[in-house]
Amino acid sequence: DSDFKINSIKLADTIAAMPTKGLGYTKKLLSQTFNNSLEDQLSLEAKTQALSANSEDHKEGIQAFLEKRTPQFTGK
Image (cartoon, rainbow, N blue to C red; front, side, top):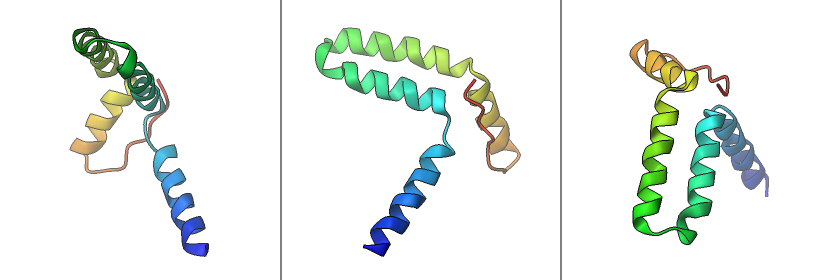
């Protein structure tokens, strides 16, 4: 029981440190998967990838990787 609580808190902390905009895009794409054709889904994913690549969080993630530091995502 206490292991479950500890692991749940660790998972929540990990998710909270992720780029919220990117997680939102992922959640939206996953929810649309079963309603779209493969072609439509791949098109949506390509458009979403372009949006993500232009976000401040994406730039921060790359910069943090290059500087070997933890990224500080802002949701922008």
